[in-house]
Image (cartoon, rainbow over all chains, first blue to last red; front, side, top):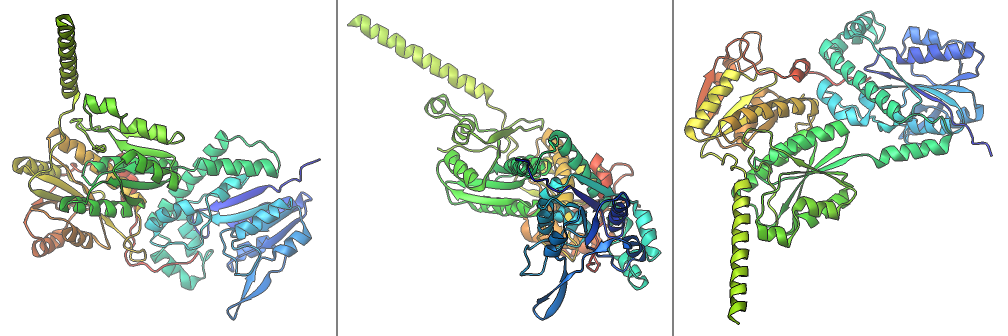
Length: 380
Length: 200
């Protein structure tokens, strides 16, 4: 039985409003229509930009549907109408949009998934700040937190991601020329978001994101198969999502472990948990150090967990299982006496045996004095 | 019977010798102890793009002379439009790299380090937060050089009014700022403090 063909998905990614994502999407849609394909615009947000409106001319536009929500009339993409119309290619602007409550899906990227499943090709647009994993980073850079986010995996499901790159200077020129916002909003935009520094930082984030995407696509070679295989591919990506657990103690030495763990988490794009297994009430000094660790965890976006238990390995294994940890980091264990070595395997070996599917990394002290940095005291 | 006793004694002696040898080997393999926490604490606040080598060396010399712990504090600014407890991945990346550099230098002198990252709306706010959270005996800091980030005269005057303990202010010699490859891009980090949120 032939497998139903899933539509092809192309995303136009930009670093900020006004780089020309929608324009380029329409331009490519027009080219496809001229080549004889059946192209419709499922949803367009031209933001009153004349060039964009002109570029959309000639393409069939599916009317928006009106939805009443709390006394306000909202306009949304008409998903049932798109599916009924069943074009070859549908252009759907702003995939990160949150739909009005009561519609088929909460988010527009989910509408797009339904369109793709119906065998319709989709072109769509998104700005880099809407990607979930970059939300903190972009908020820090721009001082503005974007509420409408989409999982990064959405970008991974696209067959093609096209980055609309523009130098910050060119984008500002476009802004000043009134091509992005009306003239009365230009000065405010220049004072706020559209600064050279902001745009340069966002450009860097966008370029990195696309580079990582290209790298991922190179590693996971596209099998060009149908929907079922695609779902499995998505599941594989989910299965290798990393979550790191760093074993710490309330001492300054643990900072080295935290630093390495955080860097690893950043590289792997995973969450970081810090765990102290306590077998006693913390002293005043330990309480101060715990407070410092808590503040550090907050700055880093990590989670500090404190568990009580006499058996560090068993407690850490339980926490790792509960939190879906894939990677444990710890300081070099304190050397043990011959007798203790005979009686019980060392903490790393116990962790490895309790958590067979978890990677373990022992963080070395790279400083000249290779003294027991970030030591994890074993149970007495 | 006597022969059995002799064998037992020999076995016991061998076991004791083996145990003693293992213990000695264990002690020999045991690494030197890390620097123990010092009696005093010397705060060393710094910011992105303004980690003065001269000031750091002075702080290290002081810490060694006084057998104190060095507390390097990276001051991170948080935009007014974000919650003060927001995670700061970009600034943290830089802070941790610089703290690693400081720790490596301190370890060559055998000085214990207890690093911090402190957030604030401004550097002064971050400093105030530091004073609330930390106990310290002295503060060593670098005054900003022309064209450099750093504490200006106003900051120093503010510190004199608000900080307990001794304050050592050093003027950084030109070209002695500790840098990292990442620093260049991070120096361009915009930290908008009086900006309105915009919609896209």
